[in-house]
Length: 255
Image (spheres, rainbow, N blue to C red):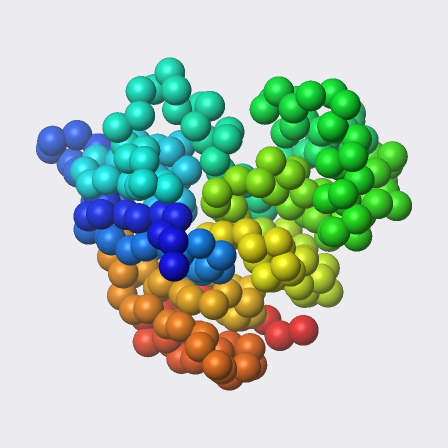
């Protein structure tokens, strides 16, 4: 398989010489094309810092990150924004939608930023909205729709430019259990039917059970890796809970 993302000995430090905190100590792993990878760990384990390093929001203190074979850590800062815009999609816990724009206009923003020809914008929006079952709310504003619909809009915005990698940071954190289940089914569909490569950070075992592989972080290091394989999602969920019990922390809910 084709390796989309590769991390080599990533480290991230905070503080000065007299008081250094190692948020990420020495992490290496790869993500294959079409994979759905989950990152789990208790608060302070380094999972958000790791996601920030991958998304190049934060610069790494040491190591290298390769996206499609390109060393992101070596990109000129002036070119970094464009590289992220063209290769990464983001789904955040708090949606990050603009209330003054309709759902359609929020999705269109991603196309406008990437300078998509005007004549192709509407057809792309209708296509992605149909796949995510939000065609009937395109003319509504974010405050007029449910949290689950807002998050599906955020997913549409994230994948409409066909990014190499979709990064999801606690995507179900602001949703109730029913909306969470619907969103996770949508994300799983994006992965399986559209072939999107997804890296999702979560503290929730139920959410993580939708992934095909999980890396568990503890104290800034990879503590364990768990692959779903041929397990049912329920069996995988139980295995996730067992690992969380071992390392401490984490929450779970069952719909």
